[in-house]
Image (cartoon, rainbow, N blue to C red; front, side, top):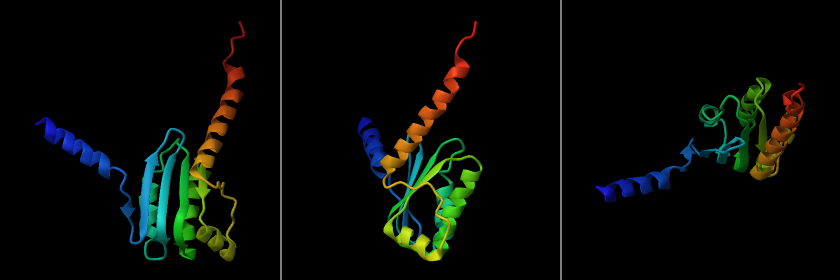
Length: 150
């Protein structure tokens, strides 16, 4: 009985981080302390952009920053810019997010002339560091409000 439980546990952990296949785009999510990181690799085009948007939105938690890591994308069609605008719509609702673009994403944004006012970072580590700094700044602002006056 104990062997079957340990085998099931090892299989569950081995397959826990497998990416979800969206017709050529592999989507993987990881909940970290500072933010939820959604990593997409492969290609996003007209045939799979809606599926990628739907799957990525599942991991947009209310009150938790969001990192969209597209550094592993080989191809990013002009229709895929909708993904960025959809994620940015959550930003308007108060959700902080950061984009890690690949060369294909940067090129598509440049060619389409899209507004690139998204917060971008070179790596996931850099984006998480930005969110940590933002948390520290908020705490510094709140600290004077929490001191005793009597």
